Amino acid sequence: MTFSADRPTMIEFRDVHKYYGDYHALRGISGEIKAGEFFSLLGPSGCGKTTLLRTIAGFEGISSGVVLIDGKDTAGIPPNKRPTNMVFQSYAIFPHLTVAENVGFGLRRDPRSKAEKAKAVDEALEMVGLKGYGARAANALSGGQRQRVALARALILKPKVLLLDEPLSALDKKMRELMQVELIKLQRQVGITFILVTHDQEEALVMSDRIAVMFEGEIAQLADPETLYRRPNSRKVADFIGTMNFIPCEVLSQGVDTIEVEAKGLGRVTLSADQAPPPKGGEAPVVGLRPETLTLVYPGQSTQDRTVDGVVDEVIYFGDMTYYDVYIGGTDVEVRLSMRNVPGRPILDVGSKVQLAWNPSALVLFR
Amino acid sequence: MMGGNMKGGWFRGYAIVYLLVLYAPIMLLPIFAFNDSAIVSFPLAGFTTKWFTQMAGEPTLHDALKNSLFIAVSTAVISTLLGILAARASTRFVFPAKGAIMGLIMLPLVLPEIIAAVSLLVVFLGIGIPLGLITIILGHVLVCTPFSIAILSAAFQSLDKSLEEAAYDLGETPLSTFWLIILPLVMPGIISSLLITFTISLDEFIMAFFLGGTNVTLPVYIFSQFRFPQSVPVIMALGTLLVLLSITLLAIAEYFRRRGIAKTGGKNTGGFL
Image (cartoon, rainbow over all chains, first blue to last red; front, side):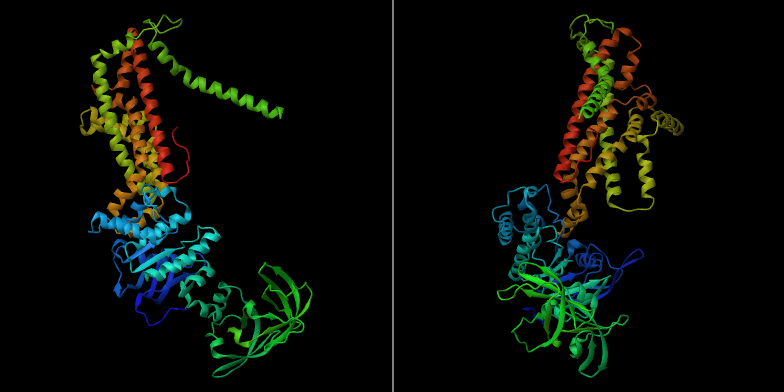
């Protein structure tokens, strides 16, 4: 990750609460977003991520707490006076204006000359790859082009923060993946803080410097994508980000730097302290293991890792990958593992007896 | 297969009879307007345009026409302005008793007009407002505003809320957002509303009859002339022109309504035509 933590703070939330009548939409949000960061608010629908984004834009007031943008309290400042601009989920392209009029809309109050503004519009269009589209009717554009117009229109004002409300959700898969990469490049090019709202964990992992995972109006974890993926701090986050096997376990002893657990099927494992996030309580302890950290040991191969025997219960073929659901250690514990389909790795049949290699360092303890 | 065709045949026959009953009487207007006889009956006597000439030289008719145009234009402007406010409020804001308030505003659509006319007459006489063009306009605004709201609500409804937010976000004030974004996008609806309320006011009779005092509008003039058999063909000629005018205005209104829906990318959910 290229992100460095010593950058200045651009946005700060201090115990932000938001009520809609009796509904508690934001429940004490605190955290910082750094200048120049590509930050994502990730969570299922209804988790408050869009509400939080809209409090930054100024479209939603907050019930209590403080939202600071670049060190200034935003209380009472309307959207048109904030150094933020937004790309809307529907893009909100003005249908009665041309592409150039849309992009130049925010420059209406700009004191620059007409020619200078036209130049700025051309530059903005060029930046998003729509050079020469200025005279077209905004209505005649495709979804991807509308998205680019919305980006150009927001970025032409050189905001301190660009807010993106699920900007890729209306695009098809190919277009979405293309735009993900373009957005990353664009963000590096302009250096503006981008805040993205998304419910797509893959999108968040691909694009972000840091991600705040939100559930039910609270930030469950705020971390860089790798930490989030490798060291989720709760079973809920682990479940939301990618796929994770949860294996029942028993905590045998708790040392200063290590924890000894007995995991069903895997046996006795010693975990380091960073593999055990603070206990949440309430649920039976489990250890989590990502599918790609488990490997099939083919006959004739050897491994340095620990191994466990298993029986294949299900085979799911994905072309480049194959997923196997395997009962391990003669127990009813089933784990999913993923193997790349490379030459020399035949696809196994259901019922095959297999040996799985795994490394204790890949485990995370949730309790 | 046979049954399907039979069924189709029955429905087609029904539709034709229905349309005939609806429009055949109106088709009589132009027929007798050009018929060279003072008596309105078959067989037809011959072609003439003298009823139109006679109509053009009728001073009371001119006064009635002037009154009607003044009333219709005023009514169209006032009820459309009220319609804009009400439609905007009902589609964008949540306020207490919204359903009840909107229901009461829309009530004149189904309220017997004669009841409203008599009530207004009692009120005007009671508080001493002299009957005249102004009182007719007030009555017509009451009748026309619900139509205006119905047309404009559809126009405001099809506006994406994020368009307003985007303009606000890009530095405009709520007021300038209204001028720059909302108004242009609902303009087809506004034009449609102006034309339809104009048309409704132009041929409205009951309010004009009760609230006009000594002032005569076109429909009231037509009604009064029916007492004189010799002026019936002239009325036919006048009626022909009014039908043409109404159809033209409604067609233009519908054109703008559809264009407005296409412009904002909404779905056509049916209108008045």
